[in-house]
Image 1 (cartoon, one colour):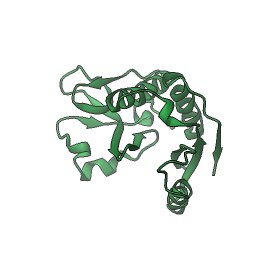
Image 2 (cartoon, rainbow, N blue to C red):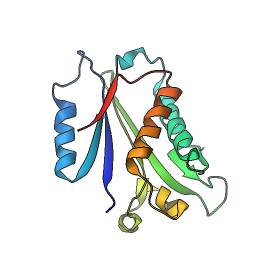
Image 3 (cartoon, rainbow, N blue to C red):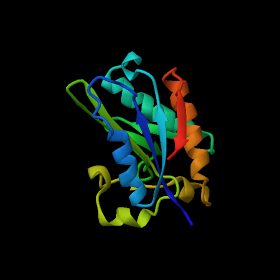
Image 4 (cartoon, rainbow, N blue to C red):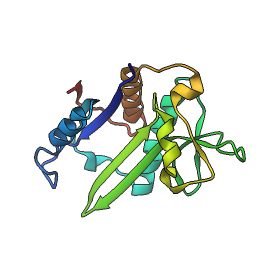
Length: 173
């Protein structure tokens, strides 16, 4: 059985973070049958990057993660996320989406790396509003299911490398 997974990054900040937000989100995801890993970091405000650099860093961590599995990801100008065959007309496929919103100096960000994703869902929508490019998953590209926990651990390692920071702890919850 293929499981869905999520990583929640809890900033462990006393500033504008809503108390219990990470726990409430984790409980919602678990109720939907999603495996959740919570990561606690120190003060994220110490990461001196602009919003554009932050998205670039998230994309870089994903690119480094999928490279570990033999996949070559890249970016497309004005289309956030990570793509395979980005420069080949008619062949570009999105393997990861990235989103960022900043409100009152608080960022809400997320990423979706398609690991063992059922791609049939994407036939019913126009993913990210982009109709002339495809969507793919690690499983589809590699021809076999990929261990989700292993991908999570690799992604955490690559985040630490790209942002030159260490996560204090991470645990399945």
